Picture 1: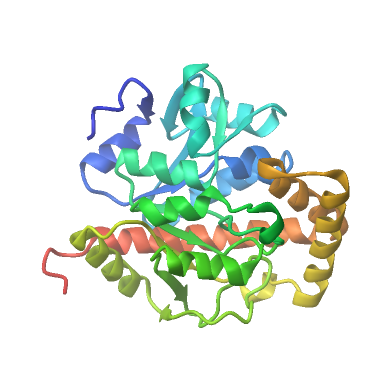
Picture 2 (picture 1 turned 60 degrees about the horizontal axis):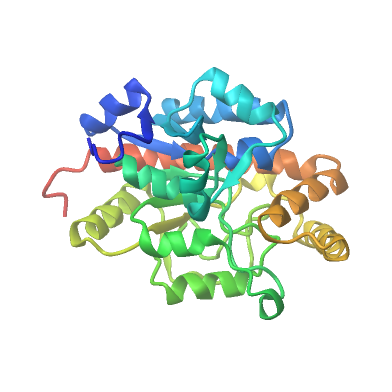
Length: 312
């Protein structure tokens, strides 16, 4: 166990023991609880995801900042605070020190969760979708910190692609430039969050969790910089019609521009408006893709933990 973070990092005992004993642990973010879903669905989702992780052979580690500590594994009281308070800070890499120094409470984004997971010695992280290059980048230069974190932090992220409110071709190009391997799990295309297909061809497809675990093993052994992105499409039965959801996303983006919503407030605003415009269909799709990612991510972590030293 790393000790140089101990003043600011607090481990759930089960997770600490699992890491020390090289058991499979899967990190989970908390921004999806505080900023990604409404109450009470957010609490139901958090419980269900942790349950799915356990059912598929791993131990869940939901990460958040509570009272100035990075908590690797939150309790029920923490969860209620994150799910019901409207003033929870949305914490990316740049915000971690400030929130801890002020003894604040913060929900960790993909970037911050990756960073904290790596501090804790956790190799796998499940989320819904990553951030990316925003539309009209040439005007705003708005790129999610998630991409930079993937470029430098050795954590494998399992998601349903980048959020479809983004510029997906530019996001994929950015990941390529930064040398981040993007693995399509049983798919040749980058998934587009609410839908299975984006029309964007991936360079690498793998069809089993064992194959992905071996690739992670090689990347770890070679100490290659940065993370790995596993793109796991939303289940077929939960996928929304592409034209339908694209038109709603366009409407939501137009509203955000008129209202001047920018920066870290943009994604929560857009997701909320999309839920309203789809009359909850997008929320249900979001839940199902998160559950699917939890299942596959946990199986990858479990497969990795079983690899012998001479696995290749």
